[in-house]
Amino acid sequence: MILEDSIMGKNNTYVAIMAGGVGSRFWPASRDSYPKQFLDILGVGKSLIRLTFERFLNLCPAENILIVTNKKYRSLVKEHLPELEFSQILCEPSMNNTAPCVAYTALRLKAMNEDANFIVAPSDHVILKENVFLDKLRTALDYTAKNNALVTLGITPTRPDTGYGYINFGNAVEGEVHKVKRFMEKPNLDKAKEFLESGDYLWNGGIFIWNVNSILDSFRKNAPDILDILEKGNQYYNTFQEQDFINEAYPTTPKISVDYAIMENADNIYTIPSDIGWSDLGTWNSLYSYRDKDENGNVITGKVIAEETKDCFIRTKEGKLTLIKGLEDFIVVDEGDILMIYPKKLEQEIKGVVGVYKKDLPEFF
Image 1 (tube, rainbow, N blue to C red):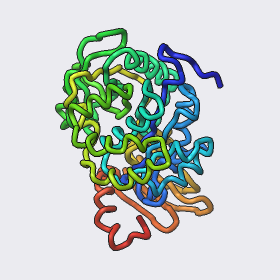
Image 2: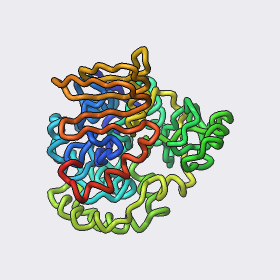
Image 3: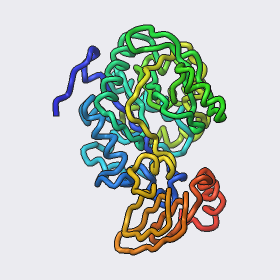
């Protein structure tokens, strides 16, 4: 595989893959002990985190890729990405959302390379147009290497979706790079239709690009309470003492997303509109939308006889024959120890169901 140099030099390019989530909306396939980023949810023989890792090898060598995850998934990350050293797996002792995670990553990278220019990306997204995606990232990296800028890839919307935040963007400042006017919360359907029709809005896909100094300066200005805690360990980053410090300090940081802490407050936010065939695969419905359907609108994995059944997502275990009749617009997921049959239109309830029953039946969650 040929690694391409960009204006800042490939050795200054890093990628931080966020892989600490539980994926409760994908229960019962995704569990606390084995969340969705480690599943072959697409049926291609590779987990989502593996696909994400291989995608970024086109931008930088494996030694420049960090995985940020919960400490209980450290061994799983190593199992799926054996090329990495354990030192490349940053372990969060608590789930404090994405702002502390990004600040910790930036401090580690600054200790490794003060000129580090890096991408922050989720571990569980699908990108169909990978070459376009990589070109957009190269453009963003070139821009953040030269400017005090925080850049996000804005996903070109394909429908008036109410499940995503939106980015209102203005005129281009350089090539494909546009100034961000404001971030918008998840809208209702009428507002989402307005956004789509205007052409001035993009989906916020949570893919960020910046250099270590720009993002740390922004934390210093917009979220100093996080940085004040984590900078106390500056002498420990990229040493054997790092994990001990993080174990003690990290849980005391505020629990807040990088969107709320930084992106909605900083004045140097830019976006690159990106039509990259993106899906965040956040729910069973999003996987249903992504997969090919049969003549009845069903997505079926496993040995299933489906009569008078349409517009369903059906996933069963290997070696089991399943007979279904008369279902319409349902999710059916058989994980052996758990069988879930749930209306597709109510799938947003699944996360809440997990929260309600997890305490009493932890072995199933």
